[in-house]
Image 1: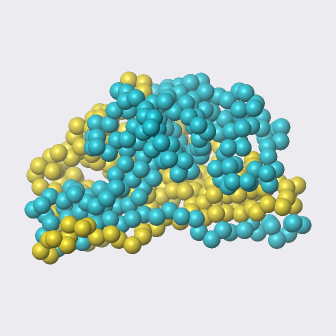
Image 2: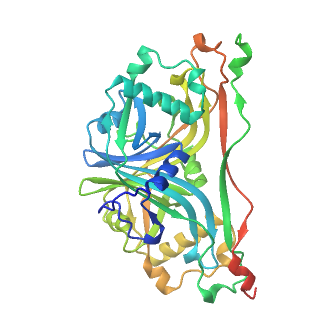
Image 3: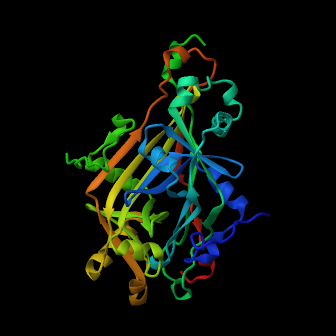
Length: 206
Length: 206
């Protein structure tokens, strides 16, 4: 199984036993998340912007309007950091100090490049639609020339990356085990609810 | 109702109709989230770190081990950006271009200060425990002197902030309304599942 090399940026120092450099672990977290946060600086001011992401092989894609500040700054190759965090539960311990969270987090470092090749850009749109729903891209109207041109796609090669995860029960001090307070995990579950059809559908011929 | 002033950093340029500068809106998003992402730079390299957060009035708190790189960098007052994003659903349109997401996002800009005052630090721990579960701090063992000293608490005054939100159905072009593809919203619901008691409880006297 392939793993990422540990670098000064990705070496996990705190709770190092939670670090996982396996490519498959990082990719699974990226694929399970719909939104990442991208950190980058403009004139020394850091920004932390949420945006949709998707993955094709070792490439992470994001997209946006050509004119957006984030797209323009990142297209210039400024250093970036991408995080995807999935929260799996609250860990309730008997001491305040040992409370924790169960989570899966993927951290990527690198610089984006603007996808200029039309074929790669088109394939990335197809892959994004596939992530939303398999088969959907054959049913929707794919981007026309104006929409295609108005959207920037940026790509980050997933090379400097690490996952950090916690699961399982609290780890209380032995001396605290007898305290009369409930301890354990409140799992957090994220799932799709009942689909809500677009009201506009009622008035359309299909 | 109190609102934040719009600044060059918080002025929403894209989909500006989704921006909301009301204090109550920003605070509600912060309070509904368990984890924020904090962006900051060290030697020109941006980082995007997920961490638990909580709020007391106009102050956002985060905490961590004294030795952590993030705590040390932020305690020096380096510029930071904090984002909390709650994903409410996928918005499926009839055209690829009009697909979207429903979300609530709060963006804060500013610099953290290290909480040096012991009373404020203790009150912040109490508030954090209150966020986890009302009444819990009376039942758990609160931090002892060593735990108290080993943990840094950082505070950010919520002054430069904005929320951005989307809700509702897709907004398709009229010409696409007849396309034979399902359109609407897949709501994403995050909720607590069945609590999982700590196995260690079975062997403890309580």
